[in-house]
Structure formats: C-alpha cells, structure tokens
Length: 289
Image (tube, rainbow, N blue to C red; front, side, top):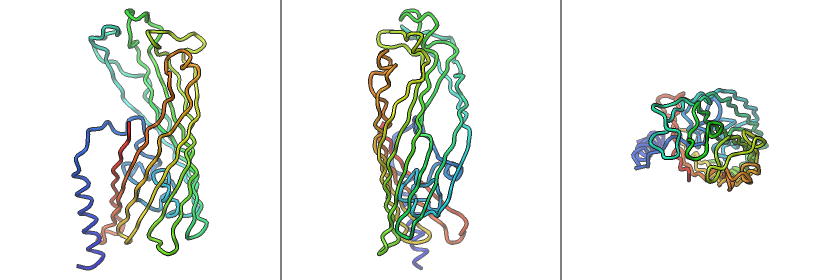
C-alpha cells in the first residue's frame, strides 16, 4: 500500500473509531455557540484541525500559523423556537398548554484578523459571541402563592462577548507542528424581572436593568499535519472567570458570578486523494457544565 493511501486509510479508521465512542446525551452546546463565521458554520461547527481559515483560531489558537494575512468579517442571524409549560407546580403559574417565548431572533457575527509574520510566528485578533440565552414568556412562570401577581418572572436575557488575541508558533525543525496560546477577555450582561430568594421582587429601578460584568480566561491549542491529506488538532479553553453582577446580587437574584465552563476538544481533517476538493472534518468536544 502506498504511503498516501495508508495514511488516508488510518485516518478513516480513526474517524470511524471516534464516532463509535460511547457518550452522554447532550442538548447541543448549552449556552455556547454552535459555530463561528460562515466557513465554520458550513462545516457544522467542526474546525479544530481545519487549516486555512482566518477565524479558525477561535476554535484552536494554533491555527493562526496555518492562515495568511487576512481579515474576516461574518454577519448572521439566529432564530430559535423555544416553548415551555408550567404544570403541576405548587408555586407556579400553571398553564393548560405550552407557550412560545417571544425572544426568538438574535443578531450574530464574527470578526477575525490574522497576521503571519514569518514561517514560525503568527498572531490573531478575534471578536465573537461567547454564548448566552433569552426567554420572554407571555405568561409569568410563578404564581400568586409566592407573591407574584403578574408583574414579574416573565423575561431573562444574558449575553457573552469574547475578545481573544492569540499567537502561534511553528518550530522550524518540524513544520508539521504548530502550537497556540490565546487570552480571552469577556464582557457579559444580563437583564431580567425574575424573582429573587424567597420570592423577593426587584425594585422598579432594577427591574429589567442591564447589569454587566467583566471576565477572562486562556486558550491552548496544538495542530499536527503529518501529511497533506491528514491533520489533527487538540484544544483546551479554561473556565471564563467573571465578576459578580451588582444590581442582581444586591437584589438576591444571582448571588454568585456566572462563569462559562472549561472545555476540551480534539479534531481531525481528511482530504481524500481521489477527490482533492473534498474536505472531511470532525470534532469531539467536552464542555464541563
């Protein structure tokens, strides 16, 4: 068997083995975005081992060394159909049927600037959504038994925005490897009319007030391409530590900070020799919720 065919066969075997690993059921990525930018969303969110994408450093900071001097801007829109029902709850505002959240449409976008200094060093600056969620129910979730007569517990919205500068290094003695390091600066905000501890209600000054907090974390990545048809990648993103909200902490709505959990991921990309324009990519990610 020729070396290229052997590498492709081994890569295909590894992909088959990884796809058969037992795993827990999960509801997508929770509050985390599924993908970043048009290229990555077109690949279903896979990209930890996919080179040549300016926004790839968002998934793996080592990938900035595998892209050129490029600017990437992507705009999008997210529509989510969310339904819910309060049923048989002692303190709930029980409803005979489900209700649809009126918070369903959200703007989305990604910005990335990549700069390759030479064959060893590259840098990337990326601004992208870090996650979040929102619901806006026509009927309140809690009932009069907890003191809610209709003016509270309808809506909540939380958003995360990440800014990540990163650098990558490709050793001159073995250019099949690249290593990356990124620093994440986080801005998050929230507004809500939720009830607090023991049914405490927000004051009119704090109800639906946008409260914000800053945070940060770090990001590590490695990329290995032993052959033009096969590449592997691995990444670790730390917990995104954050300040506590002020207004909602004092109102006893959210007492502690709202961290984003750490996550690990591995990825593989295959380019089948018979179809040179075809790229197969797959990732496995673990989010420590």
